[in-house]
Image 1 (cartoon, rainbow, N blue to C red):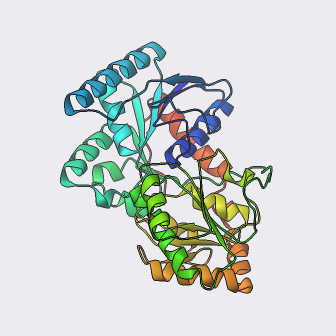
Image 2 (image 1 turned 120 degrees about the vertical axis):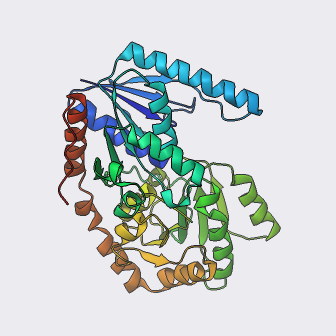
Length: 368
């Protein structure tokens, strides 16, 4: 059985991490796995050793005419690869990437498993129309939350299944390369607008009078990095350190006092899951489309704050830093996530779904 997975990149990212889990369970189930990256970025995720790794770089910059040519080139190259590999199933996470797969497979009669990984409620009318069209072309659609599923029409809901990201426990080397002090507020994320890292910086500045010996460590890269550096410089905020993205931040950071996620919108954030498993008290914005609230169990496991509320975030930082009993209770309750997101259970559901698509069986909706 051949499975092809389309990745946006083999570097760090929520979609890439989630897809690497699927690629590895497919390999363990003795499937022939091909992983395709749309970027030339280096491999920072765990891919199956025997999987075929293919790079088809998709350039997203340039003038309008160049962008059109780039899209055509990528689609032709990707379609040629599909015809060569002849996979039984193609798996793609993220509406834009699902749409690419549906275009590249026109007339090829290959079952596609697509997955919504973000917040569909922020789509424009044009995006909504084209993404729904793409999802209708899929054999099955995987959602992470009920909230995201409920955005879509009945035709898509009837062939959907909810499979959250699993918790994958790793052995950390604990090198403590960058962790100069245990009084560290940790952030690791793509530095993009929806992650609202600037809001964390401003909240940290507000909390500094009470957290004089704390440092804010931010790991990641993205289009907002220059703006964040400018903000730190203009406001003359001390004790903030920016680092490049790394494969596993916990190889470099240990004993941190808290982790912060301040997104305006999220799917099912891997970074929050990893921090919870690491035993760090977590603060997170209660953002759509419901993944954070699910992981927090309505605020039991994670300290929830309103979206885009810097005062509430600053207060939460002080609360977690100064109230040891409260911080320890968050850590204790967060351990539940290991059982809630059991990787063996979630992996079996993925294998069942992929085998059904490969064998051409009619999709059977999982009982609620």
